[in-house]
Image 1 (tube, one colour):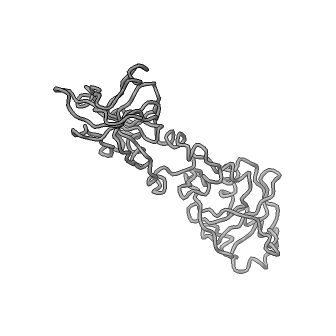
Image 2: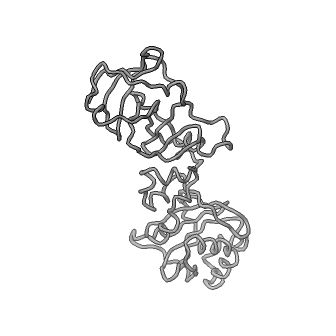
Image 3: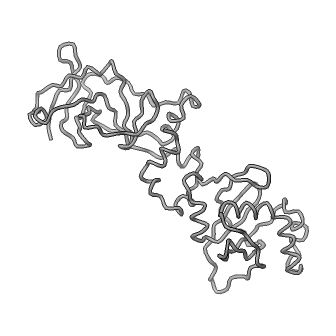
Length: 298
């Protein structure tokens, strides 16, 4: 599995609504500004010194508010006196200076973009919700419509290297052995019984993360319940999403791994089947073999 597949599998993100994705600090949509690659990011937009444009995406009206930017050369020259510039000339300058941005917006929203006029100032506190953005040194806000949110709020537009994502913690359990027990053996399991675990010391342990992923020497793969009983550490641990991403990406992040060693004797253990706890016990030796000694049953 790759990092994006992991994110798409986690229930929190698999069920995330587009607005949750768009509002994530990790939002970073790859796009093109003119001929150059760029990244569209969310930004707190507090300035009131803006050029406000009434625009259309298809036939849907929106408001685009542009902050002053040196890359808008002609607009920058008349910025302080723009209120005195006739609207047709001001719109023509905007079309000339901001053409690359307008094309970018058309591409990312996937609706034809058109300038209609200078936007009327809101009155009586009726200003519609908007989203602030930054791309390179351009700052702007755009009406927060269902169309805009749906187009931008895709998991593919999240920066998987962002600390807010990498720091997310996931519960995991260390699995030391897995085997089949018959229904009769399960029913007769009692305190004092011992289950041999020849895998310990010869087969590497693995992590089952969030009940969805397996981490082992092959990287990260989906966890599949297969009807076997599993012997796991009694206490869960946590791994970060960043650690999981590092393992998933393999050699590119060499040296970043989740190490799972063999357990020492007397390690507390659980016996589980399909996420249901069957018994608790400890690791000890029966003769020269490691074994799970049952101390309680469920």
